[in-house]
Image 1 (cartoon, rainbow, N blue to C red):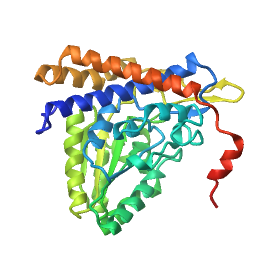
Image 2: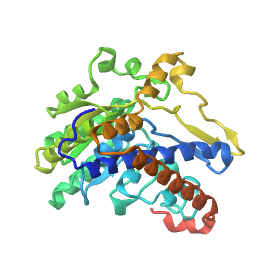
Image 3: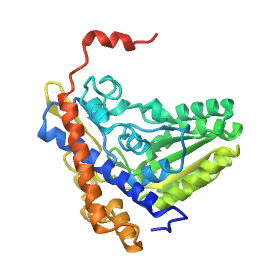
Length: 343
């Protein structure tokens, strides 16, 4: 665990609290499939294991900056301050949802918080984030865009096109590749030339003459330092940075319930079910970033065991409220969908 880098103790505790809240939200989404069968329709993809990367990154920006994420997207708006009850209602497809029930898990958006949205299309948010950065450059207010994507998205043509134009125009964007070791059920080194050669994926930045950094994504302080440096560079008009944040996804690829209620979820992590790598997966769980960061904060005196327990209890109560709100919220009226159709 890296040093506090001048971050006040209370801010460190706040980062930890955000990590706990994100994990509890993800756990309640996962539990909904068993506890309330049929409530979630369509896909959900969890990012448990990436909480440190999320809060470390989002903690490096300020009001007015903007964020794009992948379909593994629940943690980012939580870190930005979005209403978790409205988020859960959205995942449940209810009118009280953050997008009035029309977006679901893979299409969350909260522009008022700077969260410009997500997509089920791999890599789509990379050019979108680049375009938002161009708009920010034109506005001239010093705004920066973070665009998150997985390691698999770096094989999309849009990744290369976006990094090229962002570098040429020195756009204020930070590209954050959260390398979670798998592209669905395929290991990264099986489909990425750099990984196959034992190289960090951040070296892709060299092709566009921009900085490329690989960081331990389970350490929020290391992530915060790397992203802060990149954000400062972008805000100063010096252009983009590519950051590879190494995380390990602790849940299986995704969950889905399709009409008339047929489960299509992955019951076990693919490290075990496909590769038989039980020891690898158990090691990843032992490296869980949340207890790791908690231990660091307790050791340095920033957090007491009692305060940690209070944070956990508050997160549980908050997410129970989110579930209750989502279940009680009505479905949107069918005719209201026409209000949100644009030509």
